[in-house]
Image 1 (spheres, rainbow, N blue to C red):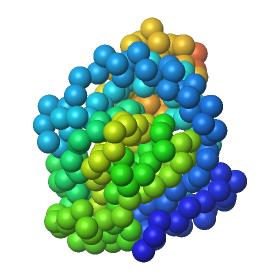
Image 2: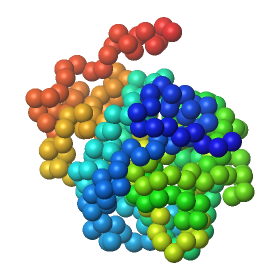
Image 3: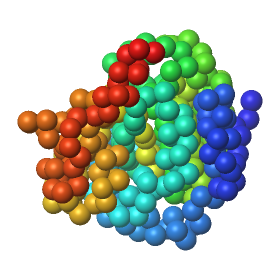
Image 4: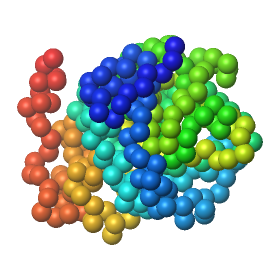
Length: 284
């Protein structure tokens, strides 16, 4: 089964439907190559300082550069892209809210073997979430062309409906080939891996992931983004990073304060969460 490709003008409902059915989809040319080059320019100093991974899963020839909200204003725009947020909201609409889970440049160098095939939601201590209950919406923005030869992300379309803890081989997957500036969206339940880089060039993508707000974030946004930078960020981005109360009581500070009151006094709401919404869910 090939991956479905969509134009950047596609309806959010259509992209979300493909994600729910196949577990992954590609939106072509969301950014132009020159726009992606501008993002790369902001990230290069940080990527240059990043060491290679410490183990086989992280990749001994792969660099993983995080903290992108703090380090790159243009990456903040990617995090808040309306098409991506809308699609994530559709996929994760069964929960009260979702949040930013991680931001990371993944640069797979020449000679890196294929990564172990896995589900990203295994990060939650391998908890057996109910089948078809999605907890993550993930993206990889192509900073370079993604080809089978240079290590394009490999996926098993439809495996989001498979049983958990299954084992697969590279031959069971297909490469998510896409042009620079395109975006691969995939659920936390799809079996996938980083591909083997058999080329002479580094394959680079920006991994931005969202998860349900009642789950722990993989990247600690509160420490990755220093408070002095957080205070300069838009309120909507701060809320997405986790500076808000949701599901009635989750996320408050000391005496039931809204966390926004710590970062941006005057922008906080009073009270806890939506009690009416909470009681409706209790009765449903």
